[in-house]
Image 1 (cartoon, chains in turn yellow, green):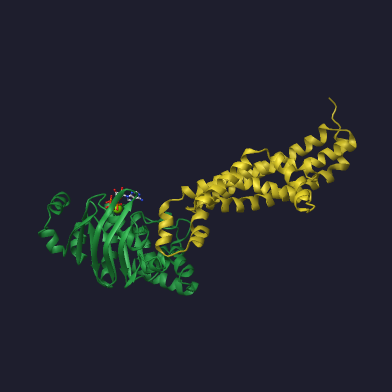
Image 2 (tube, rainbow over the protein chains, first blue to last red):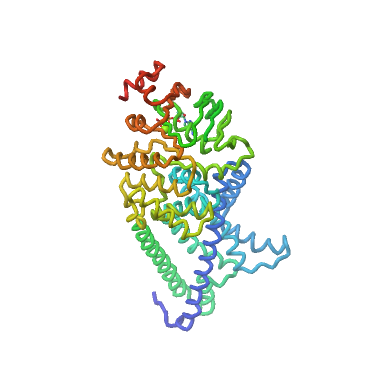
Length: 219
Length: 240
Ligand SMILES: Nc1ncnc2c1ncn2[C@@H]1O[C@H](COP(=O)(O)OP(=O)(O)OP(=O)(O)O)[C@@H](O)[C@H]1O
Ligand SMILES: [Mg+2]
């Protein structure tokens, strides 16, 4: 086996620029996904049956079909359906947000349910309306409980983000393929981005550990 | 101050409160006692609409809070509640626990809310704990903070649901002392308690519940020395 990293050195800046693309994509998808997931989780615990049904149905759709299919549908069907020429990155963030919302809504729902019901009663007994009660009292405690799970969800998003290379987003994965096409070397560029993914995931895990420890200290 | 008329509360098929009627005057202190499961907490929780009555009426300050037109949040601002398990907000400091609702709900400025909070903390003897998180406090201290938090809304009525039941014995007194001081301020209070000595000392009236019925409604000296019903007699024999 002879590896020739020398040949891909000129392409390294091109590959490294993909880190930003992948990170930005992941962060946006996680932010939109968790926000939407929070709203969905509130529907799931609401007293209004049709809202609950809707949220359950939504979740089952996104859990019951392959992510790569959802991605392809959004990217290729949107122009056909509404005539909007959606960019690959928009299609990616949109799909990943919707998908991540479905998964994270389950986690967030469990987090909310795990908050002592006395917290709700105390808020209500002080005359606090629903919205500030959720935003200021219940959700901060819920998110604290589920922080590790949300980090895992973010890590999954980061890794799955490589799927957007299939619709042409120039992320890390896609850049490795481009370099491979130019140099006819496959192993080296893929190995390089593999290491980059790994380092990013480890970094995220570490950051979460630090964050968790810091939050625990406030207890 | 509080008038309860033919109050019924059911959970599904289970009727927990059965045709309860009584009145609590302004400044009066009533102790609610009775065996476990008799409906004491449920009665208390109907008064601030944590439980929605199934039938009957409750008037607070002349307002029918069971009317569908009634603003539940307004009622609750005026009726403070203290829980057995304190229910302090763990992610907020003692000070923030006290100022949160006054700022959010009553719209007080931070300065005004803090001033009220500081006064109250002083009254419950915890001003030096203002910047601590609740997890750093003892049970007795937590409950005193919880009382202060409820008082920070400046309610006309205070409800207590077994405020000392979750406390170690040596901490019961500090909480009861705070409550006694509160009685002297003339605020209307309804207290579910197993502390018979305390009930006898501070209550103007004792309500005895059993099986969802309001079995006795009498001044403490009458109730404790000469209970009319067999049920109350049996209960007192057990707990005294
Ligand atoms: N949310 C609820 N759903 C169904 N049943 C309930 C609910 N809350 C209370 N109950 C039932 O209503 C009855 C009265 O309960 P409640 O808590 O008012 O009693 P209590 O007098 O406060 O008892 P304790 O001294 O044990 O606190 C009990 O049988 C209880 O199981
Ligand atoms: Mg009770």
